[in-house]
Length: 359
Image 1 (cartoon, rainbow, N blue to C red):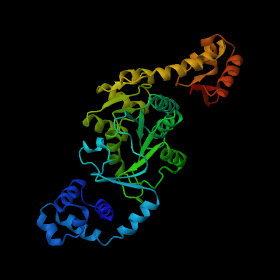
Image 2 (image 1 turned 60 degrees about the vertical axis):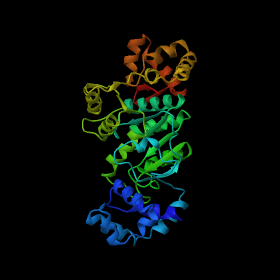
Image 3 (image 1 turned 120 degrees about the vertical axis):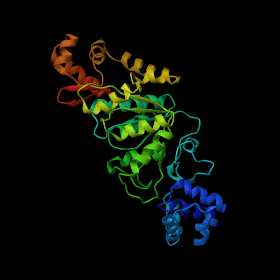
Image 4 (image 1 turned 90 degrees about the vertical axis):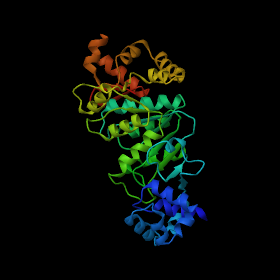
């Protein structure tokens, strides 16, 4: 029964998490805090006048019905003092009073990495995010991100493709899929990871919630990868928070003329690590990348000699048929034939007419 009151205290709006903790610790538990009279709240000296009024107003909310509705939605309520509350969150400034979870929480003691970046990313950024997400999964690294369009979703989908676990941190209630087009990812994450939010169930996305969400992404991660970002980007906020929390930050270099690489280049100038390849990063993180290398070698050995020649000229930057013809010395028609064969094997992808990248 007392958890209903813990939910009530967590749901009080307009009062910082720290002051809620102080009040709970003064009262002994949330139920005792609920029954404190106005004069007791004022005598505690913990709250400002508007916060006292917020507490009194919250008592009129239908929190018992909301709590039961949350349980029916299979949303797990985890307050800060619960044993399963992530230890990584305890070490940051202003940790959430409680989090709401669909699925599971990241495993304690297991390495976690955040993959974040631009919503409107390039095919290069998307493919690199998929590649890093999959490589992390195969090395046993948990992938943390915001389930947003572009880089976030690609990194998390890569992790699931690699058979690993990934966790989406939302800037809305855990019962709301945002963006809507990621509904498939939203459902898959609940089976192979989890959905986490500090916002109450039913809370709609709001711009102000996303910077706060970013501090949870960085807090739950041991390392943060920024794949593509403009010079003024929410991903840079995540990177700054990670640095404040003592985490390593890596950035993906890109074309000097690309606006989506300017934020990454800024981070590199400031001392962020440079992302060269998933294998190199895993080695730097002292994680076994042998499986990743075996998969790449196996794929290359399966190719015919001419296929391998074309494949070796491709990376995550789009290459045209004519350019590949010049580099390989093969006729353009033959190159196109080989690219179609590689595409059928799932090793390359046509991103625009006669332009291909590795997958």
